[in-house]
Every structure is written in C-alpha cells, then in structure tokens.
Length: 231
Image (tube, rainbow, N blue to C red; front, side, top):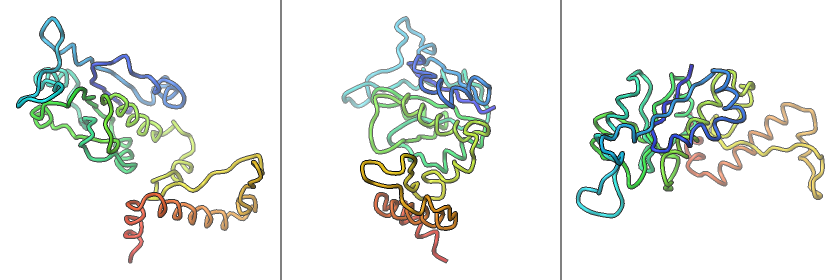
C-alpha cells in the first residue's frame, strides 16, 4: 500500500479534496493510506509553540528545529522519502511524481510562516520540493497537490493506463487539444481528422498539435524535447 504521512499544524485540512472523487475512492478501498501528524503535539510548552523569531532579526516567524524534529521522529523511519514543501525546492515534475508513485509513499512536512530552521532540514535530510515560482500561505495546499498527482498514478486508481501515457508531460510534451460532442459549437466544428476514423492520421495530428502547443507555450520543455530527439 502506498502511504502518505503529513506533518502539519492544520491536520483538519486533510484529507480535504483527497477524500473525494478517484483519490477518495482509492483511499476508502485501501489502495493508499493517509496519516496526519499535528506538529503542535510535539511542543513542550502550554501554548504548544512551534515557531520563534528569526535569528539575525527580520519579519515573521520560523518553525523551530527541536519541535519539528520531535514530530518527525514519531513517524516510522522507513524507506519513504522525507519531503519539505518549499518554494526554494526542486520543481516538482511528472517524472518525479512517477518515481514517488512507484515507491512506498512519502513523508511530507508542511512548512508555515517564514520557513523552517535550516538545521532541521539538514539533520533529518529533508528533500525540498516546490510546485513553482510562487509562495503559498503554507505547505498544505502543495502537499495535497503532490499526493493527488501520485495517487492518480497508482494501479487501480485511474483504470486507463493508456490515457495516463498520453497526458501532458508523459513524454515531455504538453497534451494535444481535446474535443467531444456536439460536433459544432458556436460555429466551430471538431477538426475533421478526428472524425475520419483514420487512426494513423489521428495519431499524427495529435503529435503535431502537442509539439505545436509545447513550442508555443513552454520553451523550456520544447528545448529539452528537441535535445532528446537529436541523434
């Protein structure tokens, strides 16, 4: 079973959207499991303090290394990667999601405030992961997104592995445009090739459209794709 362990000061945010739709059904059927750990339970004072002022001065607060260490140490130390959702981390990619989904699961720390004491990151060997170049109010929404991305790849969740293989980023390209009935919408028809029944032409059109969209919208992905195609 794929296991997600989440450390947070807001455990009530989970499972949240992970409890509905395909992820929720998979959770209920035991394809994956989720356990949350309230970081405040590891605090030792009556106020359950998890943060303090930053060394060297500055605005905001920093999550304390000792409290987080105690919280992390309550989670079984197995072979699952320990992740910290952080805007300065390595960008999350579909390849990394696939590797995580193929493993045992993940232990995910949700930061808050101005961040986490650097000593904790080093001492517990946390891998920092980012959803993109923007800042959230905390790591919880990012953790939900990461878990959802992994769970949908687990066997028995989506049901159609071929569909997964054709999604955006599956081979380094954005996904081609999709259409369905009605055949004409506000004067615009479905592209004729898609209703031709010629599977070879349809596949070629979809590949060409995926390449066109990637070149137009994601120059970074396009450059990497072109580099891989070189002999």
